[in-house]
Image (cartoon, rainbow, N blue to C red; front, side, top):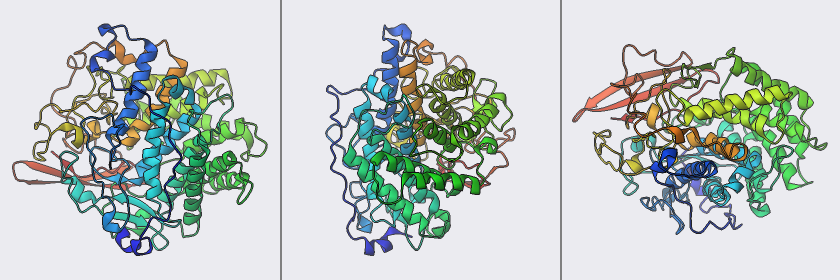
Length: 602
């Protein structure tokens, strides 16, 4: 329901934001280097510094996505404080947080997933952040998101799931001032529960609580050095409350509870996998806290494995991807990590052998091509129905899981050959994203002269004409350093067209797996630079395709369209001076669910 009505019970935020101090930021601050520095021929920047610059840029992108009152430490000189009164219509303070993508919506689903992914990776590859001196920025980045989630959880049994009306937001293209309203907040509560989003948010709080507690998930790994027991305890409190909230109500999708309220930017997704993940990570966070009161860590863990079997998740054979809507592939990897710790007070049922088998069967199906995932001719892991709209995301999330599984300390693989195979595959996927592809494009803005020049992002574009997104201006006014774009099509082609959101939109969850991939590379390959440093200026222009892609923005007869797992219904509404707004609705089948993108302006 609209939080306007629920807020009668919540006139003040009953949860006080934590006061635990964050780490001091470096002085002078890290600032993204000039794009030309991403080509090795232009200087003598060391390999390790190139990786440091890449990690720094990736984190900087989140700073460019900030909403609310910006601090004096703000490093994005073209961003302004914005929407400082968000939530006021609902008698709440919902200022702060992050815009989810290239627009001005705040959405709990992708934020929770991104925080979970980042905290998981930072727990395993924390030394990479420490070595690059990026841990203080990681701390600031996480807190900016977590503190907003705390605001969005104003009472034990309520959670804000989206802030802003999707349709209003879709009809605005411009800078971060004068963003149109109204900006209603939408909430789940006792009368309108939402198992999927409450469980995922609980999991995010738990994963980050374990990180701030300094609790390693795997032997011989070191979490990033941002330990703060006070903040860890606050996050655990919110994780536990949300866990108890969704378990106190009938399980359902949040969009089923609120289906008559609005068109949500992110549709409800299967809740079984998220409930398992929430139990699993609450076990870890509880163990990390050392608490002996309340439900024990082992009880949470037993419930997680019981649910995994009861719900027949079987990551080993389901061939589902990891993204904001689907957690299943991550579960056996996490359980294998926990089992490998040899902690007698926290052991999953079946022991290490079972969860190694589940993880490795899934990964082996990826490697040998027997699963849904296939390689494009250029080498990108592609899942029909999941890769069509933001092709890099499924591949990079898979690579991230393989690195976490095989590259965390000694790894938890059953053999040295498995460790080598998984790491080699993951590194090839990362290399593809960093420019070792038929387009010679590193799909991260601002890291090399061949990086995308026109990301689908209203803030950095400098334009305000919704009728001419691609031409006003022709070149984006500002460089959104570190932003990962959607990626190429199934033929490895990329057009770099600003209005073409499947290929060029940026998003929080697109960046998320790269944090871990790059932190690992800093640790494992400090003397081998990112691939894009070999790309001379103009390498993309030499092979840039003509015309336009075949996708929901530029439909064409030759396009195969999306797979049968995701049916897109496209209608064009033409008016004004050629404005085409493409409305689409996702038909979600089973677990293969994609990000639902808003109406496209062109």
